[in-house]
Image 1 (cartoon, rainbow, N blue to C red):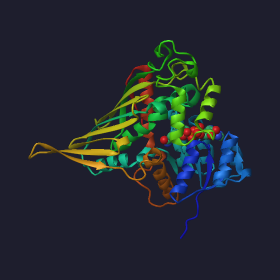
Image 2: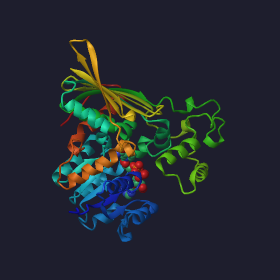
Image 3: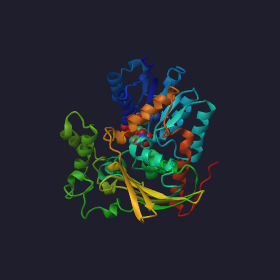
Image 4: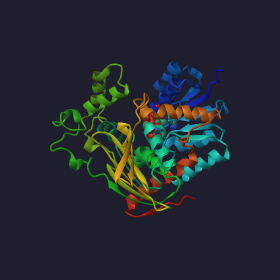
Length: 419
Ligand SMILES: NC(=O)c1ccc[n+]([C@@H]2O[C@H](COP(=O)([O-])OP(=O)(O)OC[C@H]3O[C@@H](n4cnc5c(N)ncnc54)[C@H](O)[C@@H]3O)[C@@H](O)[C@H]2O)c1
């Protein structure tokens, strides 16, 4: 029997909002999008053309939609970071279930307010921690859960977003300045990784964190000798790793978001945009470019994590040491190794898991689609997966992120208060 479509309101119809709508189509469970909200006319026009949203149900201000009362089953909240709390609270007060983009909030009070609102109004609230759905992290979680490595002793993880993403989002993009977007680098980029660490080790809770970091390498003093203020006027534009023309065309080609006129139009736009084409070392970016994190958990296990801008290549590595074995792998290679010690021979048995499937080449290594499949099941009260990042299950990770940034700022050890 054909299922009734889930009625959804899309708040924020940019990359993520449209990606989730497309993912729902791709998994055969498309939404009926009854209203769309975005500041930008072209985003609303796209929602009309591509997803059939009625023109008179497209709005620039989310408060216009609230006036109708509850007109959908859920809200897909893919607004920018600093609007998540305000919009999530407003719609949950009307009883809407919600798929909410990360980060939920940029401080503990707001995070707990959102979680409390969901509880108070009986709303299903799922946070878009898509990496929990990738075959790589699902396998790591399953191995830990089935006791394959004994008790977790230490998790060591890292994330080095490659040059292209660093340049696009964190040097010239909307997450470059924490005062403008409301998120630090750790919160914007690695709330996923800290969520994963806490999820993989969720038989205990984080207790203390310490951290070092800063912005010391992508700063004016480190610009190549004689660098111009504008990338297109710079003698280093053929050799600098932050050459905006090359980087922007390349990442937009990979993501399929070049303007209609292709690379030429993109270069023209960049040349006309003095802000976007400013030397990477001289922007108003103020997030860190290098941060190391240590977490101690209540049961004595630990985690270490490194977030470094501009990795070559882009990498997320994971090593989990257990009392009776270890697992190690790289997300980008879709491979995990389980290692066990064999007492009788003194050798190490290695089982390699190749986790490549047809989905891993899709957005977020297949995470977007699987998140949507799972959210749809959760909305329909069908069986959802062990990955589901329901709000209460993400709190430990966010508290770690806030505490970690505080620890780094103040050069102190910060105790995490889970109450
Ligand atoms: N889960 C992930 O892996 C992942 C990946 C990338 C981005 N994100 C998060 O998703 C969110 C959206 O990112 P994006 O890449 O889609 O950005 P985007 O700029 O492409 O899209 C955001 C859209 O929301 C609109 N918007 C923002 N606030 C609004 C408001 N209050 N009212 C109306 N319209 C509003 C903007 O005009 C824009 O069109 C961010 O919070 C980001 O951190 C998550």
